[in-house]
Length: 125
Image: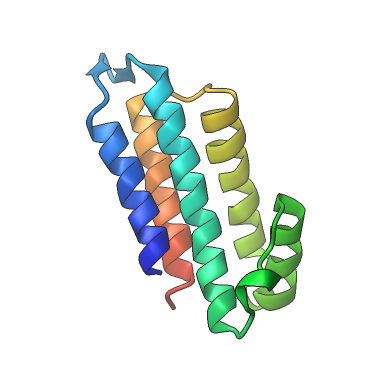
């Protein structure tokens, strides 16, 4: 989980440098960048877990739909919870946070980063 945690740390560092006023980030561009980086941390956690399961780099997913398939195939032991977490993070980090730039409240951003860390930690167990 070394690389995924590195990505997550990078997201935190981006946010730490971004000004906050009245609990809202005043510059949305770096917040969007941090969300994109946090989403990459999620994908890296899945990739690292797949490599540990014996897949090679060429077999790693290349689209969100492929990530959904591998989660169902290799991690179904989590009884759908992991898939729901992935979908929630996809919607929050990638769509709302990065793509649309809709999340700039500091509390919500920090909560999203915490949920991302919790997701990554599930692959360490």
